Length: 130
Image (cartoon, rainbow, N blue to C red):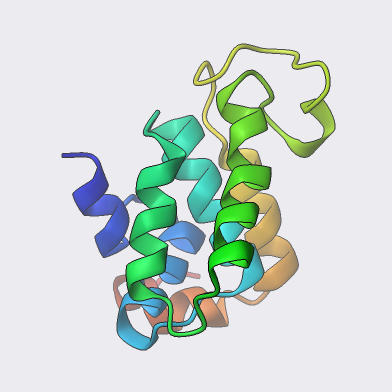
């Protein structure tokens, strides 16, 4: 049930939504978009990372098995088993799914799309916002 809005890019987190909508429309997703979507699926929705890896496998046009599965495992397994961010992989500060990963979503959006042009392109309902 939670997988449906995630796949449709209707999570309510603009960078996550833009990344997933681009993926559905074009078969492409940036590295930043892939990581943020993965973090959100695992840490915020609490879903099994393999569901996301399988879905990306079915949608990506540049799909390559080793790269896709390694990236999902590297990005998500440590977080699903205790780490909440890249700095916490070895010794997590908080148990999984105890806080939203909005920091990562906001950070990647600010780094990758500082003017929100990408978000406005893929999430048109936000175009009128400053």
